[in-house]
Length: 453
Image (cartoon, rainbow, N blue to C red; front, top):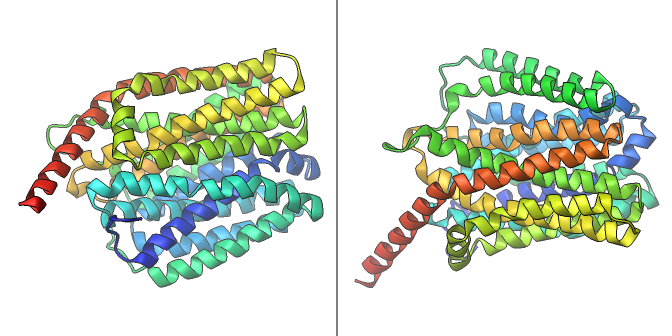
């Protein structure tokens, strides 16, 4: 990682390992969900299975707001336990429950990664760290879907969960060696109250997919899911990040929303693309998913270069057109004829969405960290993680129901709405990103001048 100054090389490896195992799980599993749905007769649980992992990570984020460092090995251990449970699940309900445990572990581990970056990495180096961690996706994006297909053909999709469990166990051992207990933080909202709010909200979201099928069910699922997520968000209202003096809270709100929308757009494009292409040519799922993931990794890696980051921020509107391209590509796949044309259009859909999230996430993450006050040291990592999960959680739950209902037009409408929202929020975040670019550039010049003197 070059000049990046992080507390301990082993800790850098452990952070990369956490990102790798979570990325591998998501990318590999996305190609197998249609087959899992057939084998275990998911039916009405399709939406719950696709959403429960993201929502369960909120519980993990809840407990990260305490002993941050110990959350890393504990999260990896729970992730391992959940993956093993998925491998041996005899019914769809057992599979969903095991996936929930896996999600809690993922939330703990990923939340610990964010908190570690906030505490252990210098402000000027955070863009590089975010870019490198995002670029870690490139390996699982290449081997994940292909390995998943090979494992499923040779054995079963259950074997993939066993592979994930073994890798997660190795990560837990590595993290246990690299981690130390962190300093706890306090919150005026009692832990029990937050757990109750989280539980009620999660139950609302989990039961939403039972609403039925059809366009009316999609709307009902959205309303019930939103209600549940409001309760979940209430559990975090007293751990909001405090901006630096003179920075309005709304300055942080729009970039946070942009992050969530970018994640939701990519998840929606990937999920809808995999679902749609599976009905055309099952083997093409690998190509669609891998294309989006590789472009995401490449775009993230590019943001580790100062010149490219500066160009992106100064030409932000051009980047904002990527969500529009993604939606247009999915529309082409739905409307145009020819199998090859549809597959290429879906690849373009995931590629554009991946490029957008890969460019936006490192920039906005670094800008947000630079704008939070010191007294909110662990609040911002938690809020960023919640933000990454709330908006995508709604989208995944509704998309899962639309997929179960074979509602292609509902999928198209959802992606179109996400694309428009992504364009608006990214454009509105321009003030914060330009201020951050000016601040970091001036700081680096001052540091270089002092070093030269």
